Amino acid sequence: MTFNRRSTRIAAASIIITIAAISSPPAIRAFALLPPSSRAAGAGAGVVSPSTRLNVVGEQATSIGPAQVLRNLKESLPQIPWLAEGDAPSSNKIDIPDHVAAVLSHPMAPRRVAENADRTERVRNRARKAAEDASRLRGMLAGEDDAKAWWRTRREVSEGGREVSDDDPLTVLVAGGGLAGLVVAAACHSKGMKVALFEQASSYAPYGGPIQIQSNALRAIQNINPIIYEELVKAGTCTADRVSGLKIGYRKGNKLAGLYDAGDWLVRFDTIGPALEAGLPATVVVDRPVIQQILVQHGFPDGTVRIKSRIEKFEDLGKGRGVAATLEDGTKAYADVLVGADGIWSQVRKNLHGLDDGAGGFAASGAAGGALDDAEARRLARDTVDIAAKADRRFSGFTCYAALASHRASNIESVSYQILLGEKKYFVSTDGGGERQQWFALIREPAGGVDPEPTPEDPHPKLTRLRKEFSCAGSGDDDGNVWDPFALELINASLEGDIKRRDLYDGAPLLTTFDPQRLLSPWAKGPVALCGDAAHPMMPNLGQGGCQATEDGYRLVEELAKVRHTRDVPWALGRYSRVRVIRTAIIQGFAQLGSDLLVDFDLMMTIPLLGPFFLTMTQLSMPFILRFLYTPSF
Ligand SMILES: Cc1cc2nc3c(=O)[nH]c(=O)nc-3n(C[C@H](O)[C@H](O)[C@H](O)COP(=O)(O)OP(=O)(O)OC[C@H]3O[C@@H](n4cnc5c(N)ncnc54)[C@H](O)[C@@H]3O)c2cc1C
Image (cartoon, rainbow, N blue to C red; front, side):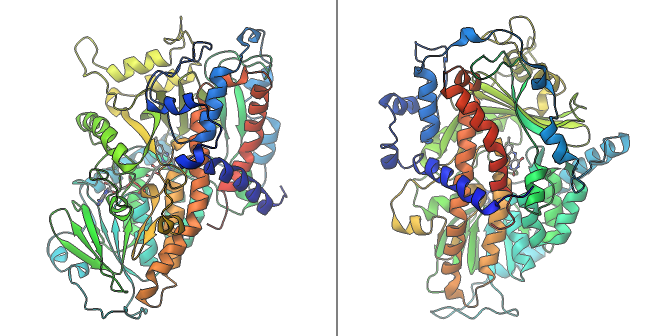
């Protein structure tokens, strides 16, 4: 396992910087040799080339140049589907091939505690208890302590600022109590800063099931607070002991790029090799409420988080005198620094970048920002279309159904994460621990769609749709594709009420601006900075959104910790922003590109020359992508 990590990172970075550079700013995109149809594609539905069988429906992503180029190729180049005959080699069906087995048997590779009745009960109870605690607002700021909170008083600071010392530390306000905000607050506290976190939600009810905290994010947390790290690893389920990869979801491949049957592996990889090479801990999966609870319990003192507190606007007090934030009810909060960790529809970003009214909003995004129930999800799906247009966010072209199925998966012993690729959709699943599988089905269709209300004839409209979309019997789905049964195994193990739906939005990898201030310091201005999804919302394919938020939190506070005088705060935040923006733009680009290309993957493979080349590149690139992600310095 010896190789030059630095040159790998540089190579991966160069490829993706190029991709990112041609992906985003319209002026640059004009040079990306996109035929005019590609721009029209972004405008709306039904981008269909009659000469192919692609039959893409739904609104398409507009901001990722290379994906659009490849999509155009898929639509316009000749395809040879009649070569899809014959039997696939049996080696395509082996879960753990020799190259993965060799890494998993490394003496340093982790060994998972096999699921058993005790463990299952413990993991499930822990998640339930954490969610209950969160909704009871344990540890939140309230009552008398709220009235006496330090941030209510504006401190008299003379022009030019004040000295910062251990006795008189920096003071920090954080907007948003998702993963990014909680990590920032924990990091600030660990450096002796005073921190207050404002969360808009009326109940701190977390959205969603478990997420992967990958090796890079675990290292960031370890650096911030070793106790939090240990608690997370203890609570988590190791996934790095099994194989991950991409499978063809529904039908045979072709002789150009090799033959594949439904359910055959296209790409298999391990996540532990790159982690061991970088000296990082093994990736774990932890329930979101548990992550939240651990951060609140061990990250900072009780009363740091204030609920029902939406930060509406802020004023830079200028010349080292800090910032004044105004909450929705008019309450003022004062500090040296404001961090906007308020998710994809960030109000802080709206103010910082002077976006249209309506660009900030309450919409589904990440951990705590999701819809609480089905009625709210319907409203958010529609509202979000408007907010996204004003907030300069990109509709990915996909709606996402997600659930945590209480079910011991048939592949649990050998597979920890897999994607079944299909036509206009794909199905992702990961072991969530405690004999539960987290799955999400991404289906390409226009934004704003909602499911029918349940009726006596169809009390389970989401399940009805998903059973058809991933049908593994008879004539299969509406396109006649018969799916590998694993998708239905998980869908059928899920309850209608547990299935959440949301449209997926993300951001352009690089700023669509030539404003020098924003280019030099894209996420920061004066005493205010963005982090997490507020700065770089990304598609979930790489499971890195929260991990990058965690890296942000670490780096941001490392830079702030160097500040010895408040006049240096803008410099520190600017440096944080410059250090982070390239790496996160690259990862955002990977995630967008991956998502746009995963769909109709086998159509890609039926294009002479390009198809086999593309498949080989996908197979070869995954270890390099992981090596780029898993770095100890960020
Ligand atoms: C299906 C899916 C699977 C994913 N899986 C993974 C994974 O395995 N690993 C991973 O690392 N990431 C994953 N992600 C991404 C991850 O969920 C997000 O990147 C992460 O939650 C972002 O955290 P955040 O704190 O930046 O934003 P959010 O979680 O959106 O939190 C923002 C918070 O700010 C609050 N807020 C908003 N506006 C204001 C305001 N004005 N004032 C005060 N509060 C405000 C919101 O209520 C919310 O609580 C996944 C995402 C999806 C959709």
